[in-house]
Amino acid sequence: MTILLATTSAHKAREIAELLADVPDLKLETLGDYPATEAPDEDGATMRDNARLKAEFYAQHFQTLVLADDSGLEVDALDGAPGVHSARWVEGSDADRARALLDRMSEVEEENRGARYRCALCLAAPDGVIHEAEATCEGAIAPLAEGFGGFGYDPIFQITLATGAEAEFVRKTMAQVPPEVKASVSHRARAVKLLAEKLR
Image (cartoon, rainbow, N blue to C red):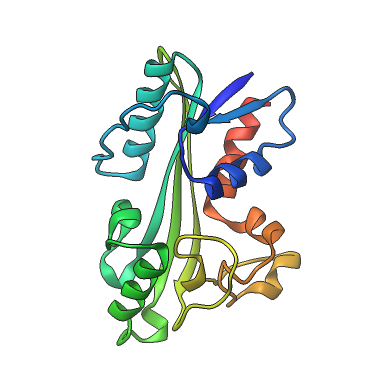
């Protein structure tokens, strides 16, 4: 089975590929393996909407199975922003967006800095949606950026809930934890695991 990952992000493609590594007879491709084409407008009201838009668009365009995701950060003190606009909330780099968010949160007390990462996945064939999955990772916005791993808002997103061996990483940012811990607790890891069960 071959699935096209509807992303140009090397970080995201690698993360998903590692999470699906134990699914038998699965080959993953990315948009870089296909002829260049215009991307669909990600104008959905929710991350689930955007994942479905991308999956259906590329599945029909390339006549193949497509897995698309849309993910973002929801901050309670900002009424859920940046949310569906996470990747475009501020012009510039990931670091620029993280700094802008820290600036907006500078006067917010620790107990009110709750946030969550959300990931929506959609697997589609040329004739329509096959399966959808959605998961979250609860956390909080750190007072300052810490760590050099991960991408996006990871350096300012603190893990606040973990059990077992991962419990020692509570209050660490997603950019500070080892990759195997992120692969256990992150929003994308949880959503991909739900999808992997269906693929198996």
